[in-house]
Length: 303
Image (cartoon, rainbow, N blue to C red; front, side):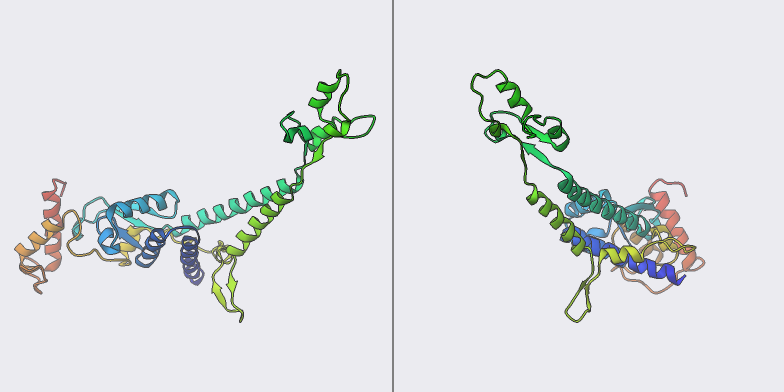
């Protein structure tokens, strides 16, 4: 069980680190709040985060497309919401797998780019630079057009053009030249090195960790043989265990109906504060059941 708790802790650290490394401030704030609160309701998220609704929806949609966050429809009628309240949350297990895959694909892309820069050899005809011909060949093509007399790589197009020319130019004028790709190779190597540095831990001069590394956190979140997987952090499961944020008072589609009913039953006073008493009719639990039945009836839903 301890391994599972540690993995969850490392999963949260990994998601927060990735958000800060690759996303803007709005996305970072939203991820941080979801990590702290475990889930947020769609209809009280804007006042909780103090963000314009349009900006919030745009950020939510972006992070969902990035597969960092998900939503679940939960019956929140008893708390002033609806039977299909959208709860936003981070599926730790899914998010870790997405990050692991993307880091792998990023490394592979950079490694392939370096390999191509090391192995690719292009041969250009001098006339290619002056647009006289289209003499551009790879290493295999260049080897197939070797001049038997001189052993030089000659431009096939220029050879044909000058084959019957009364006074052809010297062969050096259309001898292929190896293209220097040192700049491309250096750029590919620098990109790979830069990514490895950015995704690794950073230590200060006293060997104290200043920044957690994505590579290290991915290693710590690797599945342990025989251990439980990282939690999916479902809102419905967290609500049943009493984990997560509480709804902001007055928010929700049926909040006004619920407040009016509670005033009628004396659960809250006219100013909206709790009256303190359980009220007649079988105690507070019975009243809450009556509230739920009343709300469903008011919305035309089956009781």
